[in-house]
Structure formats: structure tokens, C-alpha cells
Image (cartoon, rainbow, N blue to C red; front, side, top):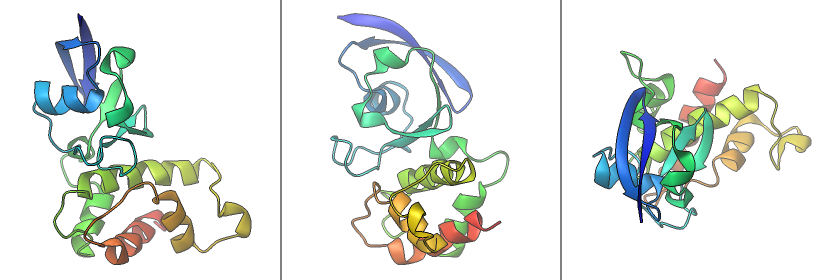
Length: 163
């Protein structure tokens, strides 16, 4: 069964007809050609498909597109505002990517994670008065990198979070 939906992606409104079983990730990649969110595990476990939905982190592979008709979504491509987002720039400066497959999801997750921290949302380590790097590590634990670029990602994210 098909239905018409509207998705606002990176500030651009898209009208499309999708099968009711289509995920947001598949709608973006296969129907709209927006490829920065990646299909990694397709089970919500790796974070390669991370998007911001109203500035909150979500795994787009778990979201049925029909349930998000009219949603405001932001991808890694939509973070830049004429210039690179500070997290994108920090990833480049810290060489915080290797193959680059997970990088868009990592960057989007870092942006959402910093909003959570600013707004005082606790994590599993917050109560322990954790060091910022430990806090970042915990909050980013839902985003996996098969290349092991974490050693450079954490300092990149910490640098931006301290600004």
C-alpha cells in the first residue's frame, strides 16, 4: 500500500509516495538520493543512519516514513550553513575518520549529543562527575566505527564541546 508523505530534509520540502513499510533511511537514500545517512546494520545498532529529528538524534533505519509525514530532518549535509559545521571542521582537523562510512552519522550524533549536554540531559556517567572525554565516549557509544577512528573522534568532539 502506498501513501503520499512530505519530509523536510535539510530545509528542503520533499513530497513523495512511499510504500507504508518504507523506512525514513530508505526514503532518503533510494527515493530522494540523499546519501549521507548510511545503511550499516539496518537494526538501529550502529548509528550510521543517525539523523536529527527536531534537533534530537534518531536512527532513521528504525523509523517508518509514514509515521514522520511532515517531519523536519537534518543530515550531515544539512549541518553546514555556508561553511562547515564546527564538528565537521574538528573531524577534519583531528583526522577523525578513516574510511568515512560512519562519519556522517558520527558527526550528526555529536551535534545532537552536545545539545543534550547543554540542556542538562543526564547520561550513564553524568552522576559520576565524569571527565568530558568520558561523557562524550558514553554518549557516543551508540555510533560504531569499524575502522576504530575513536581515538581521533573523541578529542575532536571534546574540543567543540568545550567552546
